[in-house]
Image (cartoon, rainbow, N blue to C red):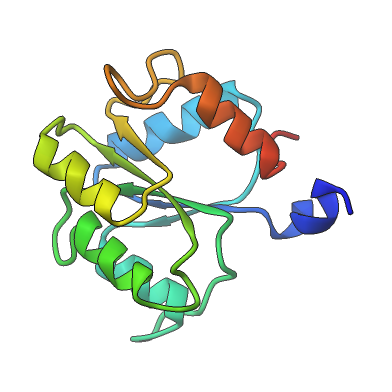
Length: 152
């Protein structure tokens, strides 16, 4: 079985949960620079993301994304609160989630680690300086994306 059988291109997508439109545009630009051309589903906060994932409160249920890029500091339902809910839901407990934040606080990093994040990204997002000191590396993230067949 090949990776294409596991992750067919038609079902590959990224969910970006981010309340700052400039950060959304920055992520879109960085993905384009890396030739990652897959659907990017955007939610403005954790509550909206949860509604989209579950098809609740008037939102149409979306197809489960291949991975989530999740801001920590958002109104209504912050990133760590959403991640805690996802980890307790059998449908999403194994979803690959990358935390994105301007915070380099150990408490945020430990909170994310305790919730089994796939990576921790210090904003602004650039794949040249991915993860910052002590964080992930662009090579690790690129490898992960390659495994998911997100590069076309």
